[in-house]
Length: 569
Image: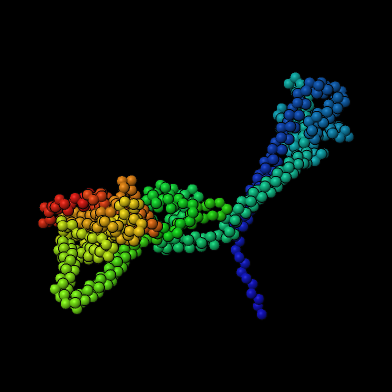
């Protein structure tokens, strides 16, 4: 039965680089050693040639040599002299001979008187020349030069060094070179091992194919994820951002590499990016989006950066606001149904008591009040979404003991609002302003914001002695939509005039403080403005102005003085 052998795992990238670097270093060292050997051999041979030439010329120019040649027995004087020169210079031989090539000196005294082995013709013509010749001592590099005495050649000098001795010198140099090459190879191998060990730790032992595949997966996942993804390095610089992140934050292609505090993001969002602790489901507002942020630091022995994810909750927040409004409407309807039942029981009881006229008066009075509010809203505001929102908010305010009043100069004709102004944005702006004003109207003006005198009013109801009131102005004229909401609550201090529009600012405890921030964001997105002022009774007045274009037939309309005073405060 054949046995299964697992396919061997490819060598890691660090291992491959280590093998390649070792081979490269070995090739460089061997090549350097070979070059050094060749150049060393050439230098050794050239040095030997210069050495023997200098020795031969010096002997030929010596006066004592010329005088010894004149004697009947030149060898008696020249042999000791030649041996001293040979010993002092370290060359193989110094041979002094007659023009007829008869040796007067030789390292082997028995060879004196024999014929010199080599060429002398060029020296007899007065030239000093070099040659490599095999003589009695073997192959040698020799120089032959003439001895001149009064312009006449009276002898010849040949100095030489054997090829074996030159090779011995080269081999000695080669041994030192081999030790140096081995040391360089060992040092290079050790350095390569250290570098690749570090690389192996950083690449987690993966090979090149695995790293390439991981990069492809990384890029595909980065662009496929619809949530925004940011990565900041240890210096809080933007190291990576995907397409969704660029879109959510409105960043350009030059954002990578910039510090988080230089991205020109809202202060709260910048603070979240710079935070060292994790952040979970934090809501932040940009110029036109509601973003939920999560962040977690990347820690591995040292702080390496932060991973941040972003989710777009703009649409969800708008839907949530509409859902809150619908929930409020349903609660108001339930309360109204309960109150209607109570009033019906009252009418029935009055009839049973024989007080029919009082029963009719009680029933019609309640109907007239409800109908009057409905007629006022429908007559002044032809936009059905705003009309429905005002009626629903009026019912909610009534349940909390707050009187919601529509200013007498309010007027929005049918077809005035352009299609570019989304109904959802109108609900967001006006609904949040009314909710905020209703909360403010039931606050105690004599105590801290959001409180009532102890024992006098439960939370969410008005303090005694004051009828809480919210006044709404909705007016479209001169190419502008004005939505103003005023309350008779304690108002907002000047020091908090800017803070009220920040995300998370609230006097009603944690988890609040998003409504006014959404109002400002929505207004800015539609090219409008929002202002905070103080009304004649000390409460806050929020005025929103949105461009709607010039509308024929309404440009000369002017609001009454009393009605516009609160809206423009």
